[in-house]
Length: 185
Image (cartoon, one colour):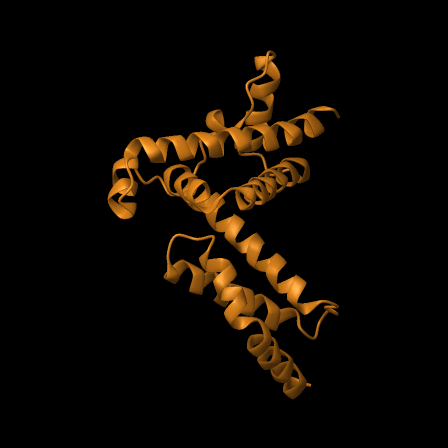
């Protein structure tokens, strides 16, 4: 049994290791974080590989990696919800939505909404052009100033602000859809 488990792990690492690391690297701040997340994914895989059936190993690995990335972002950053949430005429509803996301309560409902929010945020970010996505991630999620981003990229600060603005507009639209779905209940 341990030999079968080791073979399954070795085969999965060979088949998915490089592409999974590339997937993670595109979504985190640095290589060290990417390697830490990848290690967590392999650890979780090794602990469940024989205890429960995994029908689609690749899909399972990428889902776990995405969840680990989301967990990392949730732990280390506090996103500026004012920039991302849609402006509504009913400010009380908007405040309730923020309260759900930022509450300290750990109920199944609040955890579900938080996870759904972060998942939808990252799906929406993936839809953006690379330049817009990267500026938004650096400025909002990693708290890098526009000045630092300009130094890194060689771009003008006005260009960076414009890219972030387009990203925010897209994210507002996408998160407005989520907001409407959540507040219908």
